[in-house]
Image (cartoon, rainbow, N blue to C red):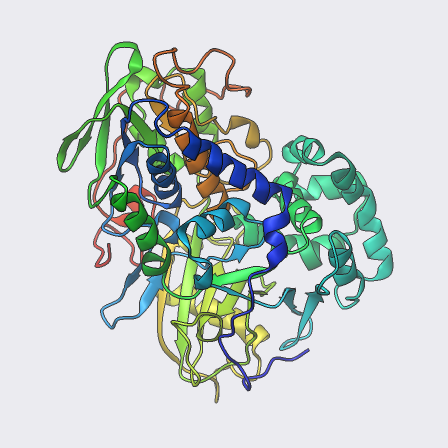
Length: 555
C-alpha cells in the first residue's frame, strides 16, 4: 500500500476494553490493592527516592498509597528520565525518545486508571505497519481483526499478510514459537543465553524471518541488531502480543510527557504528603555500620531518611556504589549490565509527507521506528506540515552499526537519516523538488535501557538488597517485563512494596540466597571509592542530550 497526505486527523479511538480483562492487568490491580491495604499497618516512614524518572515517580506514588512519605530527588530540572522532554528556544517540544504505549502494559494501564489519565492516551488502529525496503514508498501491515480473541487475532493478522513472509516461511517459524506457547515464561527465560541468530539456527528458522520481522523488532525493543540481542527479548514481546488480544495495539500520549504524564504523578504524590525535588543531584551515598545508608550528599546539602530507594539508571548506580558495598555479590553482579546507546531525531518539514496515524517500522539499516507526530499526537497536530520523530538505531558498532554514530555530528546524523528516508518517501524526500527541512533536533542517550545481550537476565538484581534500609527500582532490576516504561513502573511498584511490607526493616533485610541469581564478576578496578558523577549535564545523570559535551541549554 502507499500512504496519502489527505484525510489525516489526530483521531481518538476508544480504550481497548480487553486490556482490563487480562491476567497481567488483574495481577497489577491486585498488587496496587495490596500496597494500599498496608497503609496504617506500620508507622509512616520517610523514604528518599533517588531519581525522578517513571520508576522513581511510580515508587513514590505507591509509597504515599501505603502511608509513607517519599522525597524524590531528581538531578535534572525536568522529570521523566528517559521519557523527559523540554522546550527549545522557539517553544517546540524536544523529546528524549519516541514513546509508545502498548495494550500489553498492564502496570502502566493500571497507573493511568489510578491517576484518571486514560483520556490522555490516543489509541491507534490495531495494526503493525512496516515499510517495504525493496519496494520504495510502499508499506504493508499486519491487520488485527476486531472482536477476535487471542491468539487467533494475531494468527489471522500474520496469515493474511503474504507480502513479508510466504506460507512455507510461516510454517517454518512454528517449531521455535510453539514451545513458547506451551511452556510459557520458563521456556522464554531459558532462551536468554541465545542470541536471535543462534535461536533461529537451533530451530531451523529461515533467514527471511530475521530480515522481515526480527530485525525490526530487535531494533525497536532494545536498539540493536539480532546477532547482538538475546532471543528472550523477542519472545517476551511476542508472548504478550500473542496471549493478549489487544496487547500489540498502540497508543500515543496526546501531548508532551512532562505536562501530560509526569506532572499528574508529581501532583498526586505532593497532594498526599510526599515531595518531589528537581535540580538536586546526589553526589555520594553515605554508609555506616553494616553498610546501612546514613544519608545522601547532594548539591543542596545532606538528605536523610529512614529508607532509601535507588531509581537511577544502572550506569549511574555503578558510579555511586559505596566502597563498603563493592565486594558484595549482590552488587558486583550489576557490573554485567550497561545501557545501550540510542539517538532520537525530530525533523520538521515544510510540507505534509505521506503518513499513517500510528507507529511504523522503517526497516532501514539505521532507522528503527518512526511516527509522524503531526498526525499521531494531538498537541503536535499540523494539517500542513509533517514532524517526524525517529529512533536512530543501532547507534554504535557494538550494537551493530558500521560507525559509532553516537559521537558523530548532528549534521552527519541528519544527512544519514534523510538518505534512508529517501527510500521510505522516494517522491517527497529527495534532493531536487523534495520537502525541505525547516529545523531538526538530535538527542543522544549514550546509556539508555540496559543492553539485553545474551545471558544478562540472571544478573538483574531484586528490589530487596543486602542493605537493610536500601531498595532498588529501575527497569533494569528484576521484573518480568523488559527495560521499558512498563518495566520501570512495575519495578518502582515492587520497590514500594518492599518498603511498605516491612521486609527491609528490623527483621534484618535481605537474606543470603534471596537473590535467586548468580553473582557477577567484581566491579572493575576492584574495591575502591565510587567514581561519582562529574558535571551537571543530562548525560552525566543517564539522560538524553541535544549537544555533545557538557555545555547544554536544556535541563
